[in-house]
Length: 161
Image: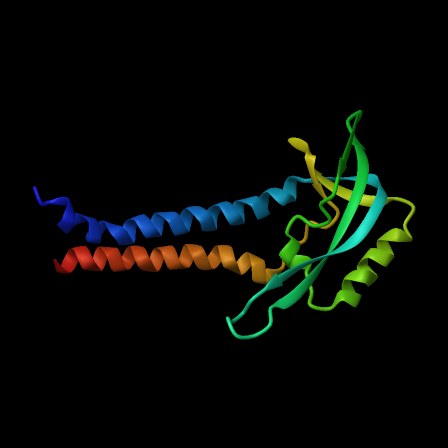
């Protein structure tokens, strides 16, 4: 039997491939579960603009991204809930333009009641916006495709040794 030192490098592509497909599948599966969420009417309690920064290089200033935040309450099957998740996926609704986010929140504030989406299996999990951008969906697909390519590289490496 070959020592582990010689086997481990050959197994590395398979381990990496498994990890990538696991994360990609979980991401895509969480998006698919949104199709089962139901909508109820809720009450908006408070809104504000959130902000996070992303450094795109070590020399430049970080880019500021703004996103809507909302605190709301809703009832489902006789129980009351409240949450502060405006979006299921914050990155799908974030923008570098603060005014755009302020306009989204201003539109919410004028409504007497708001539509809230929730997971019927876990009604505490909810959001006002459950749309996922195509850019975000592509991340899950990219992870799955990358895992396939790395898996094929692993098969090739085992075949040539």
